[in-house]
Amino acid sequence: TWVLILGFPRSGLAASIAMSIMMLPIIIRSADVVLRLVPGNLREASAALGAPQWRTVWQIVLPTARSGLTTAVILGVARGVGETAPVLLTAGFTNTMNMNPTTSPMVSLPLTAFKLVSAAEPNLIARGFATAAVLMLLVLILFTAARVLGGRPVGRLTKRQARAATAQSARDRVRIDALSSSANRVPQEMS
Image (cartoon, rainbow, N blue to C red; front, side):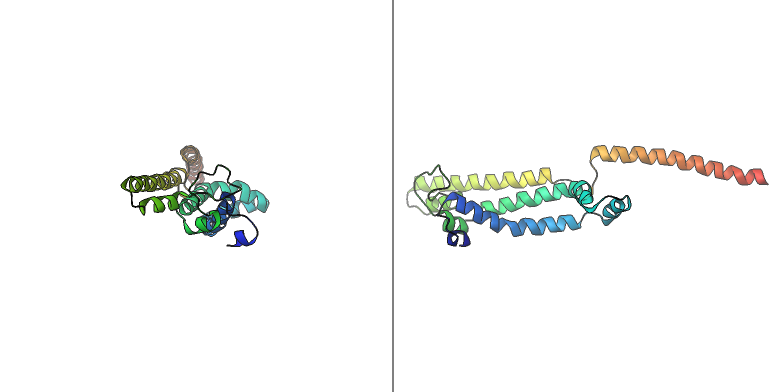
């Protein structure tokens, strides 16, 4: 409604602005949860090493939370794909194909599916179900992309990071064993 009050005509551009505004709370809330899951000791370690706060956020927090943030954005978009009412109010409805999204009313996929399914002709009903199947396939693709891109939980190491951590642990173990064996020899020499 605010998009229309601000003077945008009913168009695809107005619908995209309205949908972006509607998806923001979903994305922000999910991103907030993901950013809170980043371990505090990573931030503390970065601060202890003297890194400024912007560098901590840019090089520590965001890479750690990247998969969760990607998931938040994709799920927000998937949620917006199925919205019908705001698109109807801001994009309008037309029976013709409009190739310019900035000038006149457009057709949305959910509303087209509804209009076709509620028609009396069996051929149009079949097209309506096909349209609904395309919409469901689009949402399925978005959810799959969210699962694939965001499949690594926050704070979990990649394979390369895990190999590096294992190698470092092995080097540390050798060093600790060397220190402990030299510490055991000193008391024996004193007696």
